[in-house]
Length: 362
Image 1 (cartoon, rainbow, N blue to C red):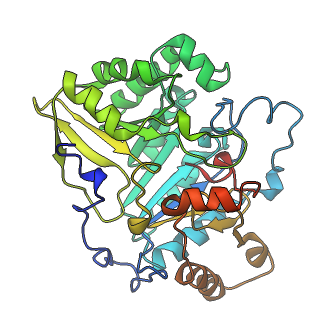
Image 2 (image 1 turned 90 degrees about the vertical axis):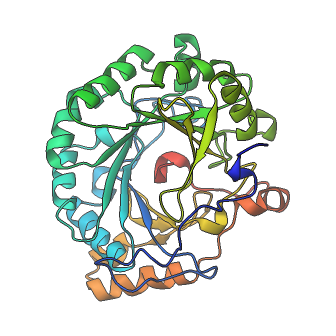
């Protein structure tokens, strides 16, 4: 397909060994991938029940989430963030669950902005509480926002949010955040065949020219509770074709090595969109992400089954150097390439448990 660089891989990415800055020497895994991005889940709870993440039938009122004492404290999160930076991380993203459910979150952001070496501090939210918190988040120093919004159709939104929330409130929150100074807000849309794929052009029309950036994400088999089937995936190449026919696109060079979205801009100069194609065009070879769960485990893959506990060592009195050694060993031993070997894993480990998305963020 014309100009779709994600069909053949991330050929425009920058060299993986250029992100040293004020951080320590670059530490790479078994495939020479550096640690650059860390997703930190600050809470495992959410007010939505999206079927592809936390379906209502499995996470109803009877489900027991983590007790507050099981959460990492802000002090513990900050301590680990400094260690991640020592290992080369430059980008931190706060996730959930729904991170805005975590009490006093702006205080964590204020403290995190003081860590030398964090160049990009972002937050992903479903947008429900964003309007009332946007000004405080901006004042605390948060750099960027990502808002999940799968459709503009209220009926489809209800289907995809588990009957929670509303399109109007999420749109109002995006507007409120923009007024507070958040520019180029990323709008993440998970596309499922027969569910919201027919509403994609509505989203493009709504956000084209606003300065915000739509990112269309192929529906993935994260965790085990969403009962994923490949037939529900809409390939990015198909979305590109549909959008390009209506609003011509041209490719944009990636910002940095490990960037997950293939970027395109409208040829009339009215904005940008991106495609995240983990299923049809895996980008494991350039994956630079580690995830920290709410209860203090690190995971080196979104599709991992088990993590490495850091909360235990912290609360047992481990020094910073000891924690650094644990994380460094985990990263250096990393061999994850799940998306590149998805069909083999699914055939051999059809019943194996994977960490759920709401426990480590997307």
